Image (cartoon, rainbow, N blue to C red; front, side):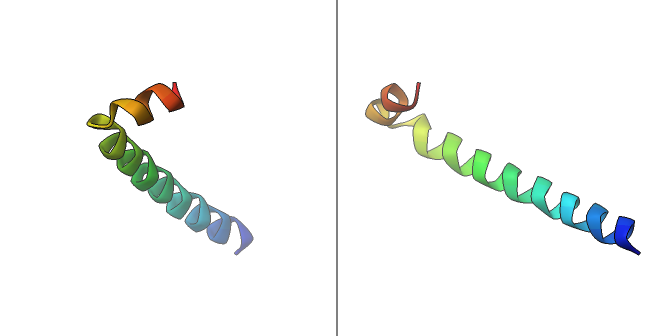
Length: 39
């Protein structure tokens, strides 16, 4: 039971990370100042 719960949580976290990485790339793509700040 616990292993199933942990697997589900890990799967959701993977999706969250993917979402936030995609958002960050989109926001940085056309913002030169933000690119310089985060590099």
